[in-house]
Image (tube, rainbow, N blue to C red; front, side, top):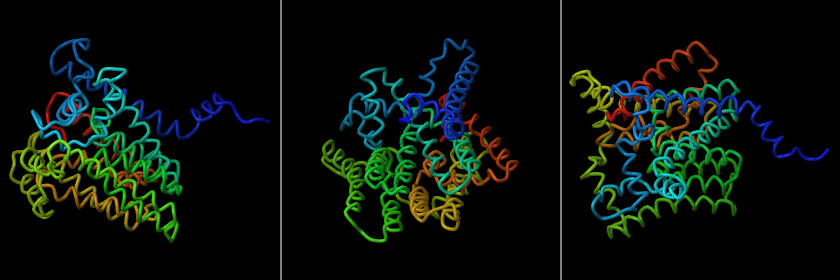
Length: 376
């Protein structure tokens, strides 16, 4: 008998556990979250659903900056502070804008990349665990409190997809593909640079020695170098982004104990309200979760040393930011967290309790975000 036809292959895949456990839940999540945001915006404004801009309500906070870069590039004026936003998402939006409106392109990019991120996470989880654990990992990713960023025109979907697929390709010894994806991750977010040392560890564990394939591991270095080159071309200073981070965005290197101490102090002394939750409680909880993930990544049999390197490097970098209000959102890019949480699939009652609590927080933060309030 001959090879199955492409149509037969597609049908077989649609009937596969991967489609049922990763793709379908992600599409349902995207549809449900957009519907919830629409209803929330209409209710808050007291207007009919038809009067709400479905995509415009997601164009909040950092999203307009990415769209501005996509339209005009990086410029020394009038908004030099946009240099802190990495170039991959604006470049993808610029390409998509050839066909559709920029906000439509950005939204579609987030949706598509969230699907790929879920598939990659599912496959990574299946390498070291059961189907139930893999499915649980995906579901807890989708109801993570800051998973609204997977639907918004933000970098989270793009970054997470690039990272998980880079590690997945590395686990299969496909170093060229892993390195290209690591390069993309480093062009999406600063923390993408931490994929490179993790890949190097994975390479040495698999190959035990260097050969020609190790040259691929140099490719991700092009990401940071390209970003520094953009800084040089626009400002004549390859480190200009650090100045903008400090002077405009109030981000500078700070000892972790000062950061944690400041968050604890804010929790203890500030008035409990929405800002108290998003400015102090959420970042502190995010750091705590990453610390637990780091410990898990070191001791668990379902982890890898490469996962530990990536998690610990990200934890250290995020815990040393002087204005850490986005940590809970950045934490979604640390995929070992969801591999760890996937283990709750062996305890369905606990998994359900965690999922429900997380989903409640997600709905609240989604409403806050789409109404223009700070949500992480």
